Length: 104
Picture 1 (cartoon, rainbow, N blue to C red):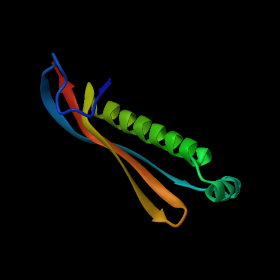
Picture 2 (cartoon, one colour; picture 1 turned 180 degrees about the vertical axis):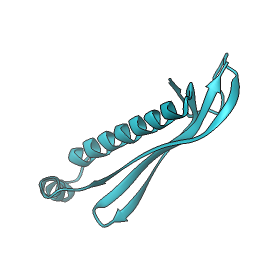
Picture 3 (cartoon, rainbow, N blue to C red; picture 1 turned 135 degrees about the vertical axis):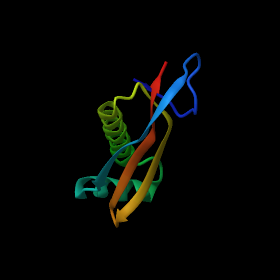
Picture 4 (cartoon, one colour; picture 1 turned 90 degrees about the vertical axis):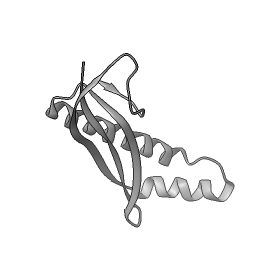
């Protein structure tokens, strides 16, 4: 399946729009990561534990969006976007969404 952030796919024609494909995950911090993050906050620099958590969350949201598009019978997902929001303190949602389409 083609997944792209663009509105069109070169050399392909969108023949049908199936709807919005979406996938999300909600993740919370854990005490182990918070201890290391707190120490890192003192000296500065990247908080690698959170970077890894965010990367895993984005990948899971993208995979869920892909499965949603497959259920619709899509050949591609165009105009893909990622967004994040805080659900509660220490807990955030990553949402991946795009337009599921059929191609010729």
